[in-house]
Image 1 (cartoon, rainbow, N blue to C red):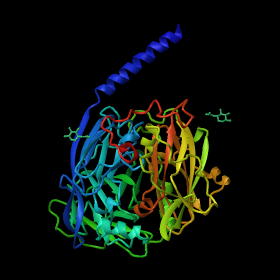
Image 2 (image 1 turned 45 degrees about the vertical axis):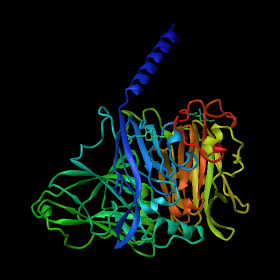
Image 3 (image 1 turned 120 degrees about the vertical axis):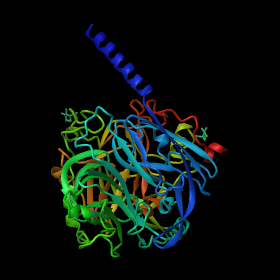
Image 4 (image 1 turned 90 degrees about the horizontal axis):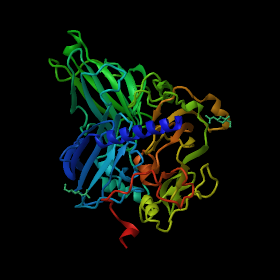
Length: 546
Ligand SMILES: *[C@@H]1O[C@H](CO)[C@@H](O)[C@H](O)[C@H]1NC(C)=O
Ligand SMILES: *[C@@H]1O[C@H](CO)[C@@H](O)[C@H](O)[C@H]1NC(C)=O
């Protein structure tokens, strides 16, 4: 009897959920992607604009919205947009990377369609192919909380999206050609704020008001230190996770990371009659580059006075490590749900697998390549997701890739790691190089539970933060260091794990996770039944055209 009642209740719940889904509001965008000449850092460059804008329009949605973005490719190259940090619930068809989608060809259009499930926060989108990010094409994403879900801070009076990133004067095709010819990316020519060079961007403040700044590092390689003259920043959000509120005078933002800070404008007569510098300057680099923007009050002079805000010493890793460790999840608040943690404590879940990924640099046919565990990724002739779906003969063999550092000679390969739906995976990123690394996993957030200098060993587990580690989608690994993350593989599909640094990614530092549904342990039993069906408008390419 009781079971019947439970079943009826479950059925009602399911019907209710379906109803809420059916009535999910829809936001639709039409974006024309094209080239435009812009003078940036004193030189003309062909830039990728969206509807004539660089950066592109802000994609604004509320959690649970269905988003349609119809993208018209007016470039002379194939194009894909990817949504950095949006989890695309069970819908890797929409992820916009080369392993899941065929590109939108020049002159064609394609409509991305996805629901933003259980997710709020600050993210950005960018072109994922052919180093096009070096020409722009990026923009900010804001996902708001549903009306009924409390936000753990007073509603800010206004919000600004601030996209910072390094910039090269060279055309993206020339940069690509130099990578293809075995040369590294040079030193960037400067740092942009929302597509503008030094001293061109400004943000208007009104006395006494509070602003939410949503800041993302959209650049190719440089860690940036972000700071505002005479204004502290209260950190509130990290890639969709509300964090314990702490005040920072400067914030290190690594390539691909996003943060929200609250900044309160001056109220006093003197303070609110001045302008202020905003700086974003490179860290851990021999050649210092800096981007400058301004805050202006209604009656302030155009230019700031006084000493420029000092950042940390460029090579001071210790301060950056301390800052990283200070960013913790706020356990008292939900994100997109009223009670996200509830009875879920990541620290008490048993780890089902440990994977160790070591980044490395290698030579292949005298060309520079970057690798994970000795394998530098090469694409098969058809996207992996489509190979699976149409049961094409595998040109990749899962599990030949070693999920621990390998002493085998480096090679080219198509690395796919099979994991089971709901596997709780412990991943260690080891960085044996004297260069900072930045890792991202599509479709998932992960808990950053530990980091340290040198190599990782089992004994390091005792020092993990199993209580309030931050959950995010991009994490940096300092030189000669390791980082440990825990990730609940709760999103079926084919998901990209990549270096967020454009050069490393372009030259092979990535792999794919294939998250298999329950009862689908047999890798040939595809597609997973709980995934979104293949889109009706799916683009075909490679072997599917034969
Ligand atoms: C291309 O755009 C047209 C016009 O907006 C639209 O009807 C069509 O569905 C789009 N095609 C794809 C594949 O999304
Ligand atoms: C974790 O594993 C231990 C030992 O195998 C077991 O006793 C415990 O019930 C497991 N915990 C969970 C939450 O599954």
